[in-house]
Length: 302
View: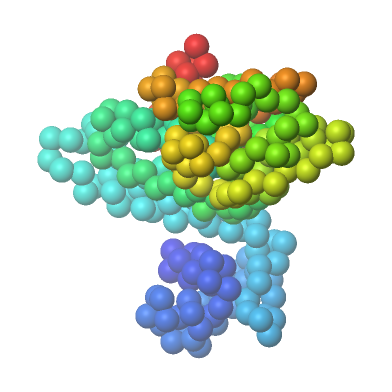
């Protein structure tokens, strides 16, 4: 098995096409096909189904893809280890590929990334914000080293989970709007201006469930998956938002938002959770990031 074959395999798996992989790697399509056939012959399994819509990984191909990514990452780390500047041989190097839910990305990650970079300036950090379904898929395929999300505690086959903190989901709005609206009740939520996450977000689903018990439906004036946008809209008095307290903590501290109590509302809380592949080799850089992540959430929770 050659590293060139691993590189070719990963390109075809990512792009779903022999021709596009050939274009990216600078080979002819026949050379790509030959390398994949040689790899399949050596492994004794079929890695791809050749379909009209492209090359799709077989079940064994997906299993092989995880370890192929590990090999590729190991080679990159090996190369990086000899490119460290003179005098910095003991400095931590490498890459950490981080996935994140939107709420975590805007509220926690910026400070965390700055703190990590200050400690380990030679480590490259790659951050991707996705919905949880994509984060799970990319971690299982080893395209992400780890991800952090906020949801009800869940267990995912093949992934190791660490519960980091529990966070209340709260209503918040600009002080002037809070004064105009007055006391809020569950029944009034269907009538007031709301700026909310997209339908299907974990904590919005819980809000909708509680309203459904009263035969009420939400009618937000703005829906977006971008947490930061919702915070800005709420600060400007556009509407009341419903977000993790950590997402609005800074605005509450500055007085740009106030927390709104809603009579009859049951407490809604979610768990911040860290996931990584059970078979994942935690490099020193990844282990250091996990340690700082747990430290950061510990400080936030406290």
